[in-house]
Image 1 (spheres, helix red, strand yellow):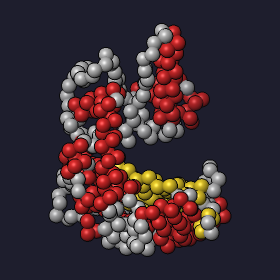
Image 2: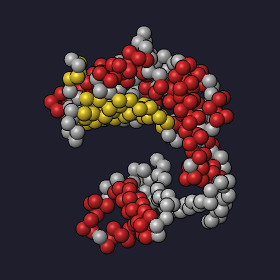
Image 3: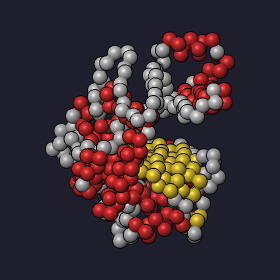
Image 4: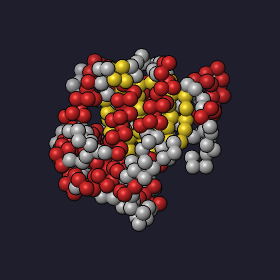
Length: 354
């Protein structure tokens, strides 16, 4: 945080560091040999699709902008094909997306030398240029829009997808942050809208970077490369895209939940005689956290003290939900297909938000 004390380099904790660079960027780097000669880097820029609402941006401009950046890849004088070939040759994978709260870039890379170059240095070079010198192209926007159109049509053709879309839309009173990007929004977003939404979030002070990999004895060198490529990014990078005159609304941070009662019944037009059911209740989110004040959770922990360490793990709740999903799906398949000899498609899934 801005109020955190600035510790001297001698106080760095190895083999992991958690530091705020001079340009305001927050960086976490850890040495972990879970997967040999591989590493993962995640860039998180605060705002996400919530920023579209709170800052008055055009609907779905950030979601489409992230996909446009994914479909493009050109920076400086290098074309998209050249950058893509560089990433393929050096085994670098890049995924850019936006959720309700953040814009996220995930990069997978080798921690060893590939094609005569250091894999860590290669991925940091790519990340730096995407932030500083990215070239926005109309053809990338067209490909991004085509992808969203296919996703929207596929969502409406799916019984589960269309039902979930209508249910979430009803419960949130049409909040676009939790819905599939519509055809109308796709057509309304221009290249400048997408560029403005994405680049306004890629300011150094708004970015957190987590980097974990099998760095081995080269951890010190990896930290130096972070300072070289990320620490040298100017503090005012992309500040021209941030409109200080725009007043950020607190309403954007709230979800307008509709008060429809305990049971909700919705009619969905469907040519086939099918049905879908949704059951809602308190459960861990994507990261496994649930309210500690819950009496049932406390009761379970009290009667099973031996398993307390495992139950306190942040991913315990999410792992349990995955197991429940697998067990119920297998049971459904056994009953519907094997016992009743029906050809129906029956499946069970859980929706976990951040």
